[in-house]
Every structure is written in structure tokens, then in C-alpha cells.
Length: 178
Image (cartoon, rainbow, N blue to C red; front, side):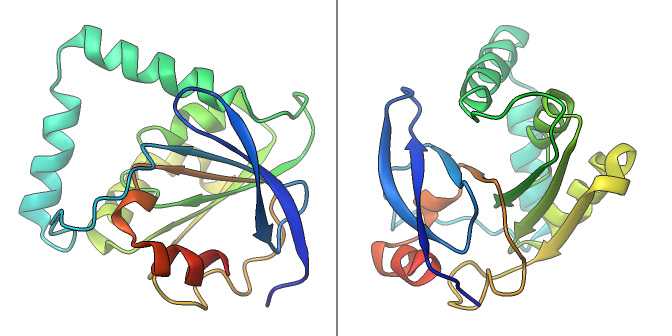
């Protein structure tokens, strides 16, 4: 369950940090990219065909776009204010196929990560992509609109989410982070 509240720095894609409450997390630093509210978008994350097409559309972008995306991601990850070599426990909301998660695990070689996603199709791909790090990664199915989605996961030093929270409505976000 939840134990108190702590302040979490929330960094958007422009790197400006603000303070927001996050429950149950020690020294929580939240990094959120692409936070805009998009209540009307539709994605069929349960369809293998749809998910494979989605992944392919991102992975088949021109190399320059892929490099720019990774550079933005690495730059944002460096906002995690932790010194290298220290144990670090990170929660990733909406891990997807874990393409960016690999960067995080390389950048923080002592990090343990718990990844949640509501798509079993994405989770299957994440497990495949994260096999080299299986000793320090746990991947679980979770409905982020469920108020109990984060219960029992323990304490985290940071929360990471990329292109996930904008799929949730404000009431759903309030339920998740209470």
C-alpha cells in the first residue's frame, strides 16, 4: 500500500523540473515525456498485428530520426540525479517493447527495474528485448487505470514513463498517483 508522500521532480521534454507529490517512493524522481492529454486517441495494444506495425513504424524511421530520438532520451535520463555505481530501483510505467529501457539499463548498470504495461503483446516483446538484463529486470502486466496497480511493488528511487501517461485522463492519473 501507500506510505506517505514525497516530492518528485517531474521533468518534461524540455527539461524544466517542477515539484509534484508521488506516493510510496523513496527519493522519487519522475521523468515524463510527451505528457499531453490525448483522450480521443485509439490504439489496439492487444492486437499482435497492430503492435508489430506500431513498433515497425518507429524502428523503420530514417537513421537520423532514430539517433535524435535516442539522444533526447539519453539527455532526459541524465536528469536522474543519481551517482553512477550506486544501487538504484526504477519503476517504468508503460514499458512497451523496452526499446528505450535498454538505454536506461546501460546508463545505470547497477539499476534494477520493474516495468509495467497493460499490453501482453508489448510485454512479450519487452521480455525478449530485456533477456540480457533478466537478472535485474521484472516485467509485469498492470492496468494503470486501476487504483491498486502500484500496490505491493515496493519502494523506487525513480519513476520513468515515455509516451504512456498521455493516454490516461486526468481522473485516471489522479487514481494512479492518488
